[in-house]
Image (tube, rainbow, N blue to C red; front, side, top):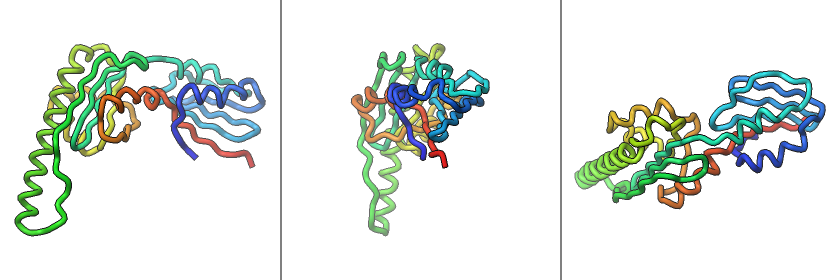
Length: 208
């Protein structure tokens, strides 16, 4: 079973295992923890530089990695809206949120459906261009300092936004592997993103 757990909740869950019999291996940004209760595999969003193997449960390198804060840019786009922000740790220090109407899908066929499709494509293109301009303007002052980028919303809308502006090429280069699927991008959604940003992927399996 695999799920994302907030860093504080993960610390509370794993702390009782510190120093107990087992084995711990740190490699390729992942912590593998084998205990009498079962196995835990933890993958922090922003990686884990420490490498080593221990004949006991040693969690301090993992907890140290989870405590690290970074300067992170976020771009969330869905058809209908976008949200762009910069986080210093969990604090939102810059943001731009906007919306633009995009028609839903047409259920009927014929020439009216073609006109509807073209209109919808025009609206979607206008939205992604607006989102790209907002991202470029908002992130430009922070570009040299930003360490990681979080992309989210709808994958196709994000891909089209990135493709619409050469000023955003660097976002893909610094993006984390996790894609953050969120509801309609609004300021409230952006403000809540740090919990997920700093959550770690936890996979568990019970001992036989």
